[in-house]
Length: 308
Image 1 (spheres, one colour):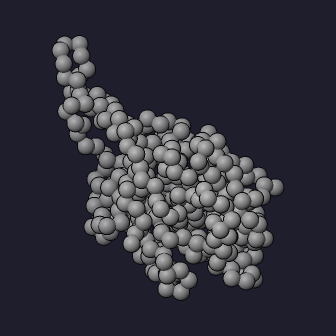
Image 2 (cartoon, one colour; image 1 turned 135 degrees about the horizontal axis):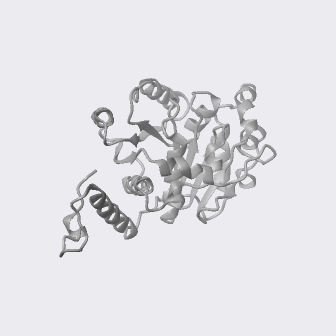
Image 3 (cartoon, rainbow, N blue to C red; image 1 turned 60 degrees about the vertical axis):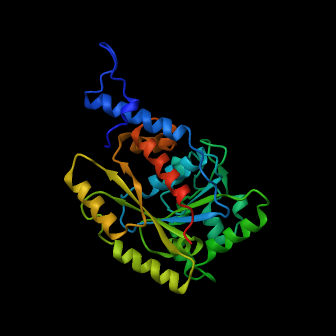
């Protein structure tokens, strides 16, 4: 953790705040970060930025990153839509939206051409945060898609139709949460998006499978979506106490110096707890280090803007 700005620490008279302990320095640093975030105003994109959040390796914080970046941007005033394309429906759970088996969902959009405006739900967290939920029916969609016309482009077609018919209040950001595999659902997400965001956990085998994922992205770009670009990498589950986490972060930055966000998401109990309460960590514990980190990552994402 970086040392706090000296101006934020009270080193006054006896009985005052003592900044000599690790806990005191951590509190001071959290206060500084919270104050910096409270005064910032994030730019809004001129056109909708559509991200596919993908990593073929499971357990890297993919859904967690999708939900918390979306919530952080919505908190800043952006209109944000999360499309839950994972049959487990974890993003739907974390955003507190209904996704029982009989709920109309992204399955109906992809398989039955249901309009997105009939499926979309508002998350209770923020007035500008919305979700297209996933239900258990999505588990069979991979098989059903095989026989459908334009099977790789079903989601893109639905989004284009929605953008045309949704009027004068478009979304600033759309995040598509993918299953941890490269099937037709993930291909639909890649074809529908302009940008790919890859969460990478700061643990052993972090880069395993990444080269194959990048090759798959290149194939999608070449054959199905020439506008697709891998624009963003976010380091997650970082434990500053271990040399391994520091080494992984260094390795990823050396390979992808332009794509990696400077913000790192720490390993955090609060981040893990939040979904069980149907919330993002942004709402569950807004002053926790995990929440502040996702708010900072969202701010960095917004300021970077879409790639040229």
